[in-house]
Amino acid sequence: MRLAVPAFGALVAEPLFLLADSAIVGHLGTPQLAGLGVAGALLVTAVSLCVFLAYGTTAGVARRVGAGDTRAAIALGVDGMWLAAGLGAAIALAGAFAAPALIDAFGTTASATPYALTYLRVSLPGIPAMLVVLAATGVLRGLQDTGTPLVVAVIGAIANVVLNVVLVYGLDLGIGGSALGTVIAQFGMAAAFVVVVVRGARSRGASLRPDLPGIRAAASTGVPLLLRTLTLRVALLVMTYVATAQGTRSVAAHQVAFAIWTFLALALDAVAIAGQAIVGRYLGAGDVEGTRAATRRMLEWGVAAGIVMGLLVVALRAVYVPLFTDDVAVRSLIGSVLVVAAVFQPVAGAVFALDGVLIGAGDGRYLAWAGVATLVAFLPLTFWVLAADSGLVALWWAFGAFMVARLVTLLWRERGGGWLVPGAAVPRRGGAGSRDIAL
Image 1 (spheres, helix red, strand yellow):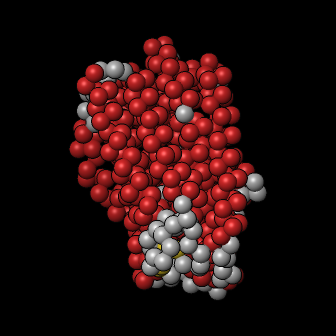
Image 2: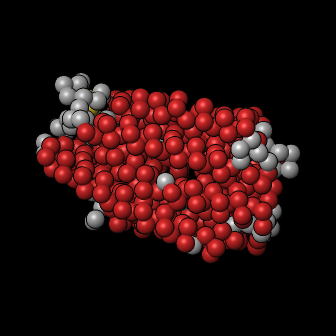
């Protein structure tokens, strides 16, 4: 609870960036909201593919902490932050050249395309800051500190709302002002995290210089998590593609529903964050039984939190849906989709908890292959929805089936013992007796 409650606050604050953008841009018009939906999906994909910077760092740092080597733990985290900065710069540069093609790939309507392109181009320079925030957050979580990320995330979310309102409405910069406000807020958050990590490194004598072997090790450990995340993002991008093919109102409603789903997912992910830190620390200390007991408890909390979230989503729809758009038809569609999303919240709670446990154990290889399997099962459902023109609600039922498939693969793995590998090193491969990589 000490880890999960502050993590809950931080994770809830993070999606407020996208929710705030959706609410502010939504009142500029439906084409603007649809444009944000496409550009937002691309940006979230780019950043989410790099979530291994947080997850892998959390697991590695926590194992070192469990083994009693805090100096090495922080040095590992610094390497992760250098990797984040370089990777972010490369993604931003590539995105600047590919922006028009990426927008066109979604089949975006003529009315929404200019807004999507504007939002994407203005947002791209902020990607290095976003990735540094991810890596630094992983360092602090691994050190069993979820309070500092909470403070930074809350201040960043508040600053983002203020900047968006001023730039969009005060200076009349439109959707570009919304993107600019978010970029400024992200750079402020990155600067705050850098100060905290630098202070911790100096107090423990850890080097702040780029260490190429350490950076390569961080990148190598992140490859399975990258593949695992890629399968999730492909599933969500396919959903956006199908929603876009159904028309402007459909993709606008999907954008709001997806933003709310992300909000709920990251809120439920508080249990997963605790799982990463606790499991990494316990296995680093060689406490297998403690790992098992913590896993059971986190699974219980995940399901319970999912039930509460699902009930709140349905009960409060009339309150929050009108905040996103004035289009009555879009509001009605959003409300219908959210009922489906609410049904699967308990499943999502269990999935995120188990996902966090296996990430904390360094079981990335299994998670990668399980992700491929569930994606292969999901894609035919989405294309059936597209071919049958079944609508946005049917698309979200298909997504619910995807979550159930993920739960089955995770429960099967958790029931076995191949992921319970003790020691200070993060396993390179899942399973007892596998080669380890000392980070």
